[in-house]
Length: 352
Ligand SMILES: Cc1cc2nc3c(=O)[nH]c(=O)nc-3n(C[C@H](O)[C@H](O)[C@H](O)COP(=O)(O)O)c2cc1C
Ligand SMILES: CC(C)CC(=O)C(=O)O
Image 1 (cartoon, protein in one colour):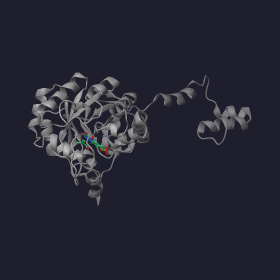
Image 2: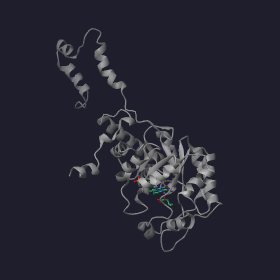
Image 3: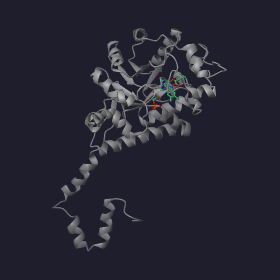
Image 4: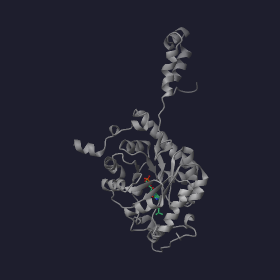
């Protein structure tokens, strides 16, 4: 054995080398066929941590989903196709943005990842309806309606940079997405020009009238909205503040998760995003009642750095960290993670 021992088993070999055989056998041995001696160790090997779960009935290797984020070709030339392939390789669900740079069809034919399609509602409802139909035809399994962006938040870096809005291939021949605003963010101009700022609850009825796919509402932060969302018949709720890109001074999403989970009472699953950077973050969100988390910036960073492989690495890192957190917290399955595993600010303040 080269170098210092790095685990207890390696000490056994060192002991064998220095001890008289009679003493080594005395320490190491068990009774008769030594069946139980072997079994004591083997039985541990058979117990594994199972991170797998289901999202809307679709199996996933871990309670992790790729959040819909716009324009992946700005990060890497292969764009959303690379992201979707990484999702397939890691066996997690891919959320595709309405504002993607690869088309719905390109992403669908690139791999067999389970895919959900996120939508914004355009003033031109016929175009949004067409996009929903294209997603349906191409095997997407759910629609994510982003409800927190009837207008775009004020993003001052984008204003200073005069952030570009490229023509998005999905909309070629349908509508121009190439907006130019010489004084500020072209993304802002694009949203102002195309998004329907009158978006409201009755639009979920409209969406249900044009698709049979389950609808997840993304951007819920209060118990009132969660109750309303269940009433109007969504299949799931995503607690999100759009990665803090919309309204500044909205609460951190993890601080409102419990309140939403509490009122939803398991009528529909509650999902979560915002600030997830560690396996321990995922564990905390699950402990507070989320069924899975969506990952936004970490995935985009992985894509920018190393394309498909980078996204896969990001997802695998988060999975490994979650697995270790579960092991060290005594949780063999996702269902073993409960509120009793975490202490929130609220509890700490109550005791003060
Ligand atoms: C660059 C970027 C683009 C985004 N584009 C979209 C989008 O097109 N549609 C959407 O619903 N949310 C979008 N989001 C929000 C994400 O879906 C998600 O809510 C957020 O990124 C989660 O926070 P995190 O980045 O801390 O993980 C975007 C976020 C980022 C960072
Ligand atoms: C093009 C934008 C509307 C995409 C988005 O949702 C975002 O940048 O947060």
